[in-house]
Length: 255
Image (spheres, rainbow, N blue to C red):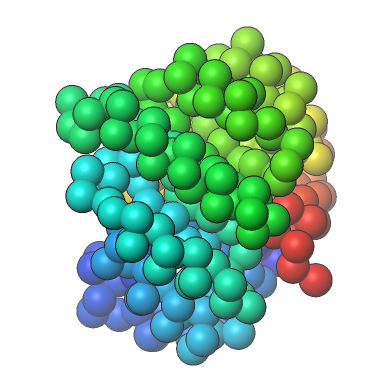
């Protein structure tokens, strides 16, 4: 069974058929989904999804690109939402330097504040890091990664960076990009990563794997990521799904 550790079913891309799609998930081999927070607007929708579907859990947090207008009152609300029974992580949080806004110092401030919240709540963190490898690593080292578990969502950096995170006991979110023909660096890194540190994720509706690249992603498509991972590791698809599902349950504290 598939455990999708990072999805965005609150996204408007699913507005037309969300209910139909989600009601058929378990019949199509999807055991569990964690719907990740990104913006303030997404959080009430995520809470609603966790209440409606037994197999959907949630995380609450603000994506770095959405931190420009954050306030302390917003952080207090996020803290309250994090106390819900089916909220299993703080995220996705981090740094994104691909665009010039919000200012990097603003991103760093709210990243650090959300890390502190995770430490207080004893919840794992989902880390978004894009074109910000050095600053992300520096902040996480200063914060002390041993307070809670962490996953580097949609890992895209080199094996040298991956080794730094392995030394800090982090997990690695691996998704559709692994199946892309131009993902040589990621494939090389994944070959080095221990299976016990890999989590499968879609980031849906984004980053659909081959043969659906460019189309709307969904949890069932993780079977193609599992197949590529099985090929790289020299094990069966069933073993990949078993190990990554157990990893996810351990990471999120889900029985």
